[in-house]
Length: 51
Ligand SMILES: [Zn+2]
Image 1 (cartoon, rainbow, N blue to C red):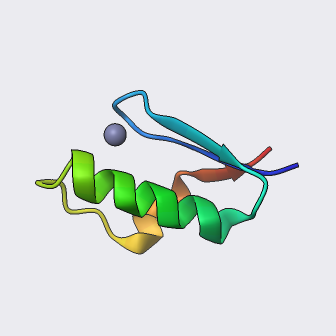
Image 2 (cartoon, rainbow, N blue to C red):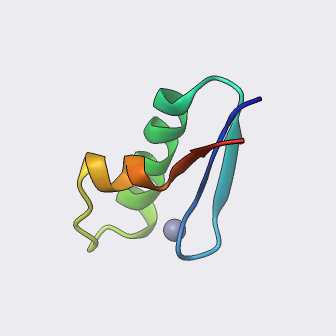
C-alpha cells in the first residue's frame, strides 16, 4: 500500500510513506524539471493517488 504520482513528462514515483512524502517529491521534481510551470500545491495533490 502506498501512494503514486505521475508527472506529465513520464516521471513517476511510488512511495509507501504516504501522500505527504509523494507531495514533497513531486514538488521538488516540478521545481527542478519544470521550473517555468506554475502549479499550486492543491493541483499537485490532485495528481496523487493511493495504490
Ligand atoms: Zn515532470
